[in-house]
Image (cartoon, rainbow, N blue to C red; front, side, top):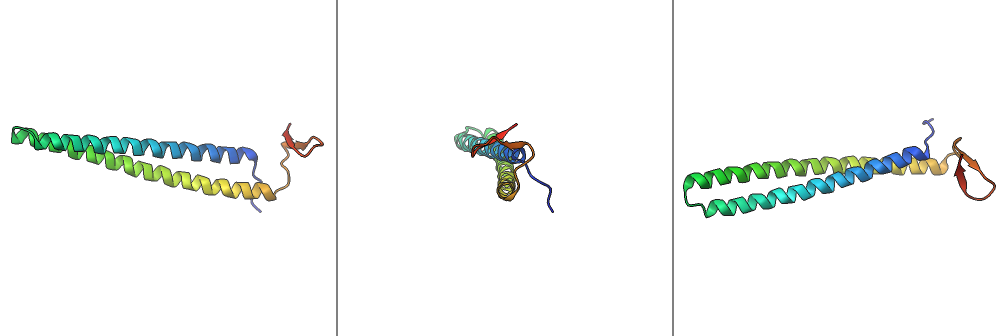
Length: 116
């Protein structure tokens, strides 16, 4: 039989899921910034007066693209972690719904459960 679950576990999973979703959104925003900056640098490279400056700017653009790729990968990992937390959250919610009231909760006589 699985170990009993508590409302605290559910709240922790929810907090972790939301944190991972925020991380993923932040990494996506940074990725978009890096890609935009890389595009701007490529435009500067195209209008450079010398070949050496154009090469330097193209190198900078490739570096920015690599940073954007790293951000995209990190966003994907954060999405995966958030997805796993969401699944855990659902499982805990179902187990709580079918479990006996936890020892930390007491019936105060009305229909609401209160933490004591």
